[in-house]
Length: 397
Image 1 (cartoon, one colour):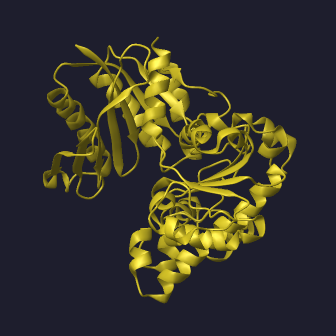
Image 2: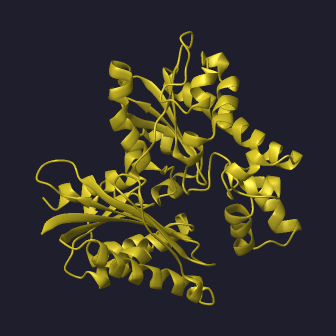
Image 3: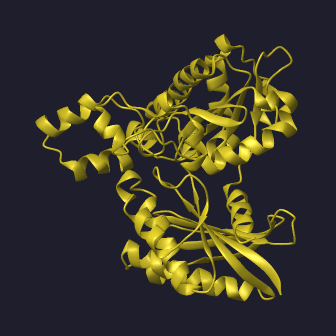
């Protein structure tokens, strides 16, 4: 049988998965990818083969009346059974999990022991939309495949190279010593892009680069020598850019005001900041950038404009952290596919030397800067699943 590595990215409303062939010392090779989404409402399965061809698509209407937690559990059970049917001739030798928060303790991928799973569960308050579901995925796959090594790959680990000053909040020292620091997220995406930069930039890949990972969750990272030196997210995945339903950076005085004068408790604030803000909150229409770009509503346009404005402001901050800027990279669902967003950001970055090739941007070319641009401007697809599979393959030897 051919050895395979399964990757799992379990979120609150979706479970993304991929199967990779493990062939000697070569990097893992795609076999299939898919997603179970709509969890909490009406789950559905969408899968494709290594060439992008559709494999299976189905709806799970019978699960609609169940709780989100029960839907999540049953979707994981179904996934393992479905893979067993699809992967005849394949032997799963490791499961690699995306884990959003590793705290101070976990700075590199690792083979999980029961004590590690408990420690990761304790970090759930720092990533409410992700960590509980990451841990649920680990526990489910550990129970379903008890003899198979489980590997955790952390979104925070890539940012451990940041200088100490970049990670500090101006709070009393005792709080920093208790772990209240800037951690940063989307690290697996940034790690993948950092590995791709030399192919597109040559020696300039080692220079001053900002990567914008733009999707329902969004952040930016400043790289020097292809290592993280600053990022927009902080202690939780709530800071920095405006996102699909998350507000991003906000004056903490607003939260104190809402507590004192609007009677909001921690649960209400959490719901507001994580689920009711961002593109959805400003537009009142949708958290989906595709819907907003197609909408004639002024509220939709304002939400898109604010999203781009926040990116442009953070770009200036990250350029300052780098002492200049040599390249800007767009990635993530919005970064890769929303040409109007890229155009708006680049217009606001002309003071940094950004000059956009409008035709290249419209066709989603890899390089979208024109010949007069002082910055190289790239659009690169990210592949967090491939990073997870590579780390899992390395850890099991």
